Image 1: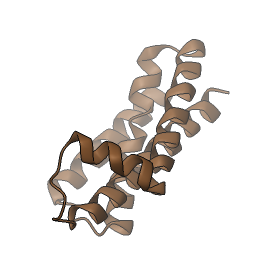
Image 2: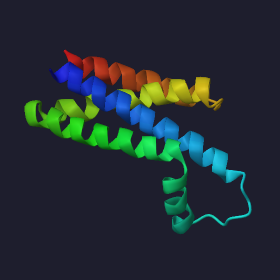
Image 3: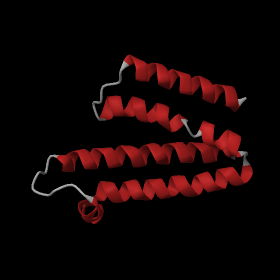
Image 4: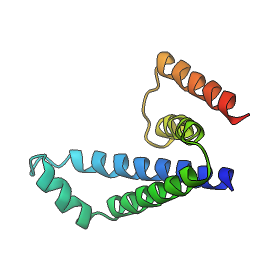
Length: 119
């Protein structure tokens, strides 16, 4: 059960973050409206990807609550860091972001840490 919950946490976190980033980048080109909290709130109700990202983050939150109910926090938090690895890879592939060698080494170190706690 812990691996299923962890998978839901990681997948929904990654989905939420990618959807947010994609939608906010699309809106960044709109110079007619100044940035700010009011504009962000307006966008949330206007853009479906932001609504989907909120739903994804809510799923992540509740799955994480279920995970820490059954597993120690010392496992749940570091293991959920797998989202950093997937987000970095998918940001490179889907969003066209540049991943520096330093950041790539960081991803490898996070992966090594996850392997250490997974045993």
